Length: 239
Image (cartoon, rainbow, N blue to C red; front, top):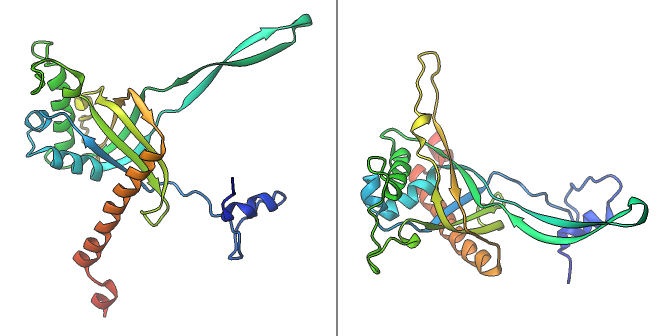
């Protein structure tokens, strides 16, 4: 398997570990902070519970309000054996992946983010009765597909287009009704960041996920033209 050209400088410069400059083979570092999420599936009844027009509006709100994402990791558990004199050796046992992803959202006036998650939790378990009234429209039964979603998460280079990390989370639903975050103090004036932990059943990191995220990144990148057109040429405005 061929090594990417940009990595050649890493292999050849193990002494100083200075990978700057403009010569061929420069190693570009991974830059964090350029991340995006997209809910390709949301519960069909969520818009009614969240008191919002439709699922597209909810998906766009969550994508636009996303401030940070903490994905789950995996741990390989090992099985240890003890030999003569207490010497130890080990073999792989099982893999244990986290089953939650945390996402931080910025709240807005009118509390749309609160409405989404309060409605989502209420849809699954109504606080007044402790039960659910979710009915799958196809099976007329309470099923997970009626309250869980599917979300893509990807990071990019600073061009907002070149996909770096990518993942798909299936079986997603929030585990918190964030009403406790709406505290208020006359001596503290500031914004409200709302961190929500989601359940995750499956974490996919396959080629098809990268292809999907690349397509989604292209769609987001195309918004760049609309942003530039909306705000115009700042150089011309200054003159």
